[in-house]
Length: 298
Image (cartoon, rainbow, N blue to C red; front, side):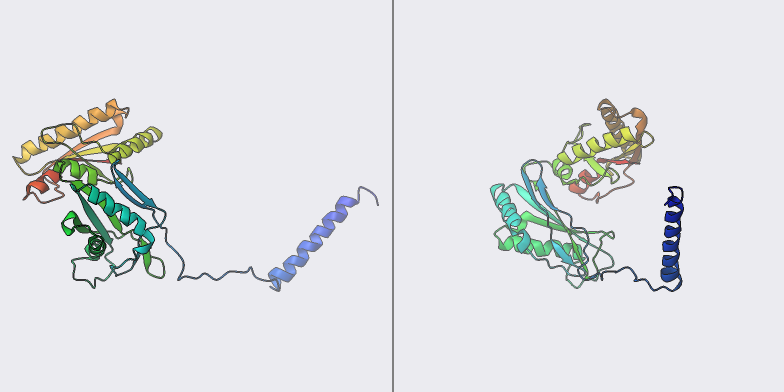
């Protein structure tokens, strides 16, 4: 066969094959459809956040699994994480000045069949009861509930990680405990910095150190973004003086962060004074919680 005819013959064969496929599969629709495997929606899962119980540098308990929660129920199974709970109770018994703060989360779409104000408190109280049965005094544990409408449920109505663990120390000041309770999640979620009475230096913790480390890196990579520092006070004194005080603390932090390597052009300050409290001003503890500077990337 002549070499010059070979390419034409190959082209003819390809054209015939393509025409046959088109006529059979596309026109007569006789080809098999792709196989689609059925999805078991009952076992489809949401992401399981790892369990992390941390008290500064003194305690770190972790697990790749977490507490499983059913929608509109406060109960959880403790067995998969009993070893971590045993270690938690041992730590608290060895540190009698420590208190455990349990936070339970709930969604507004859930119904609340319990006697508690919301399912978040009920979930925290359910765990508290278990820890008390393990030998931890009830007065060493506080509970609270927080609304979280970003909770994702699988089709079976299950999710994970609706319990959070925090610690306070009776041997430390209220401000130190407030600072320790702050959790780092993202530079786009506000974090509060606290100060000892009469001090312009904020209380440093592993959580706010992580925030500032990641914020600094993010700002270097995104020169058009800003770190907003918003000062707040309690309601003791005049509105005018509180506004000035909140601005002074925000400006002090701006100067400090600039010295740490963040461009001053990427640092914004705002002052709210007493206008945006996060707790009641009717108690000394609430007023201390309101004296803060909130930081967040914008």
